[in-house]
Length: 458
Image (cartoon, rainbow, N blue to C red; front, side, top):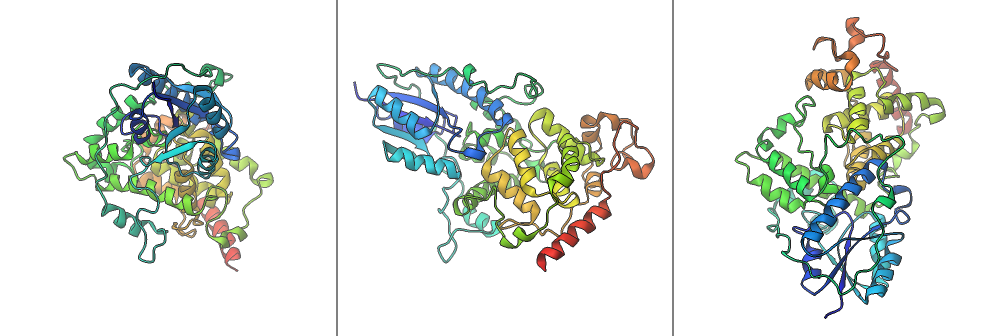
C-alpha cells in the first residue's frame, strides 16, 4: 500500500470542487486534517460567532467524509507542528491544501513547507491574486478596473464533483474530539438564535445557492431593502469554503435573469483578498497614511456611546435594528452594515478598528479581507474608499430603503409606530418610553466629524 498523503483543511470545508482533495485522492490513501490554530493568527483568532459556525461545519464535513470511506482528523495547536506530528505518526511526507491569503495562513504555509512537501492549489477565489495586473505589471488598487480585468477571464473553469470514494490509510492517527474544543457557547448560550437562520456545511451552502438563483434578477434593487432581505446570505458559506466561488458563479449565471450585479460582488471578494496580499496589516492599519492623524475619540470618553452602538441603543432605529440582528443571528443586512459602520465612524467619531473588531467577534461571516476592506471603505482610509466627507444620514437611509418592517422585527418597542414615524420617532413625537433618545443629533455628529477631518488635513 502506498504511503498516505495529508489533506490540510482550513477555510475550504467542502468535498466538491476541492482541488487539494482531488490531487490527494489521486495519489492514494488520504488523511484529512483540520487544525484549530489560535496561535498563528494571534489577535485574529476566530471570534465567537465564527467558532459556532466552525463547529457545525466540521461536524457536517466529517459526516460527508465518512460517507466516502474517510474521516476527519482534528488537532489543536500550531499548524506546522501538528501537521509534522501527524505526518510522522503515519509515515506521510506530502501535504495538499488550497492557497489562503490571510497573513497568518501565508506564514503557516511557509512553516509547513520547511518540514513537508506542501502542494498548494487554487480554488478559494475566482482568480488567484496576481492573475490580473495593471499595464505596468502591478496589482490593482482600484476596484472598477480590477473588476473589468477579471470579467475578461470569466466564467471560471467549471466546478468538479466530489470524488466517489476517498481511500483510507491502513492506520488512522489519533484525533481530538470536536466537543472537547468547546466551540459552542454555553454559559450563556448567546447563539441560541443562530439555528433558525443558518445551516452550516456544504449541503446548506448549495441549498442557499439554489434558493437564490431565481432571486438573482431582483438583487440590484432588493439587496438595498432590509425588509425583504434581498441578499444571497452566502457570505459565511463562502468564507468557510463550503462552496467554491466558481460553483456559485456557474449556478447563479444559469439564472434566466441578468445576474451581473451579484457576480461583481464575488469579484469584490477577490479584490479584497488582493488588497490583503499587498497590505497584510489592512485589518489594523490605515491604508492611507493621512488618517493616522485623525483624532478619534478616546474610548475612555466615548465608551458609553460605543456600548450603546453595540447593544442597539443609539436612538437611531435603523442602526439599532442592525446591531440587534447581528447579536441575535450573527449576521447583518449589507446595506445596514454600511449605515451602522458609518454611524460609528462619523456620528460617534470612534475609530473604525473598534467596529471592525466587534464585527470580527459577532459575524458568522467574519472574513479578514472583506471585513477590513469594507470598514476602511466606509472610513475613507482604504486604498479604494468612500470619501470621509460623504456621511450617511441614517434617518434618510432608513426611509429611502423602506426599512420600516425591518425595524419592527428587530426593535419591537417601535413596532406600533406608523411607517412615517418609525424611522425617526423623536421627530414625530412618537418615541416610546422604553426606547432611548438619540445619543447625538445627526447635524451635531456630522459637524464634529467634518471638523475632525479638517484638522487632520491641516
